[in-house]
Image 1 (tube, one colour):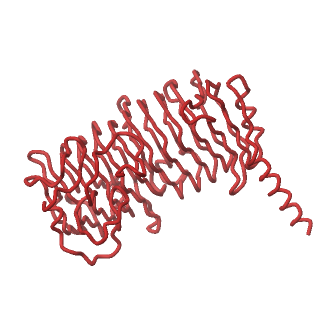
Image 2: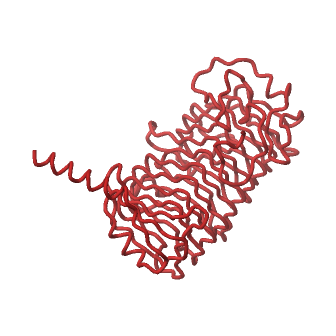
Image 3: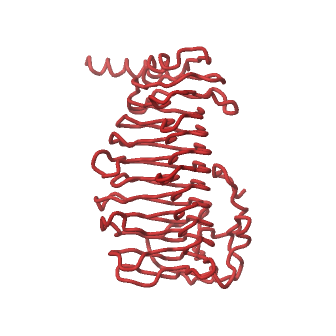
Length: 411
């Protein structure tokens, strides 16, 4: 009986905290205010500059995180830090949400948000500009439940978003969602790679509806998992302008790569690579993607690598001069109903980033397929309704705009 009474008291306290946000201004002690929050409580930051760095040591409970948010959507509060001995925010507690904040600029190797917690971290509607380190990093502790939505990363001097440990053992990130972010201009010095988004070995989840342009390395890379039940989903992303690599790089499976658009990348549009010879190129399905004029090929699979159950189907590609749109057949690779648009125009106006299908072009002449497991929608989340058009865009749509992908971008 006492335990029930105690639980009810906790829920009432959380409900009370949730209804009344605490408001502070730029002259408050930000770190102290954050670490005095209780489960379910919201800290509203008025517009202005707040001094970091902060170690967030006080979190919430399941369904009742602590929330640190900007009070204004148009004038986001900025967290500043001019030193080099810490990161701007280090999240050490579970059940924490950051919303509507600004970070940057920072010195070299100083991250915006570093996750050192283990459960339920959300970072959404934030802006990161001119960071000398990673905007959002989870590379030291295993975490279940990381949600990264609608953030903007601009002019970064390091990889924009980095999840997992390189060896796949020291830490693993699961239940990871990276959705509707905009990343533009990742410009790092050698020998650093400079990714847009990367999921390291054994860190898996979904990369959906992101717009990524002008990275040095791959816009998106996943390294796969040694556990064949953990699948990476790369879906409905636009990737363009990688200066030294491919738009999407698949270093291992299982993976589902659907309805993406990749253009003007230095290497391939979508490339499969047996990273470090790990032999994880298995159970990979690449369906309904559009690639256009990537410098060294469109859908690229090196010859003489070990593949198992790798499927490319209903993709559409137009290759640069002298390059090929699709790989040659080899053991473990199935190529089915892909359309080569190199010699026959398929897209309405690709020079202005409009990849709508041209009526009666090659990509609209696909016969009905009874193959299961394929996505039912297109790049814009419109139901294909049995219309078997190859490529990511099934119906007429406007040109792609660089910015956060809008849910109503075709209306």
